[in-house]
Image (tube, rainbow, N blue to C red):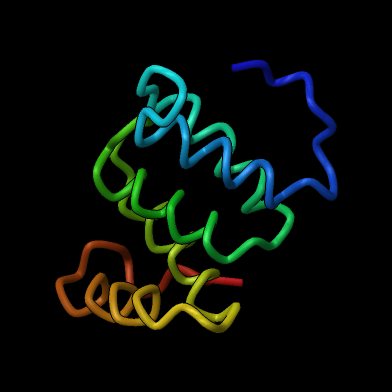
Length: 106
């Protein structure tokens, strides 16, 4: 997949590309490319992309496993509204202390 598409205002398409790469839909499965596209959409505020990116960090798919980044992105998704799964997983991350509780999340 190419990364030469415009990087702003196309977060729905970027999320879709991330999903295609993650699940191998119409393209070979490629977690690294999925992380790239999820991050592009997540940085523009797409809560689904933020959640999916957090899951990638949590599981170490397409990126190094990083619990702090997982909590950061899942937390952003949970505060963005509309994603009950994100709030539940975010709460679980702290319950099981997967990240430093003093980490400032914004």
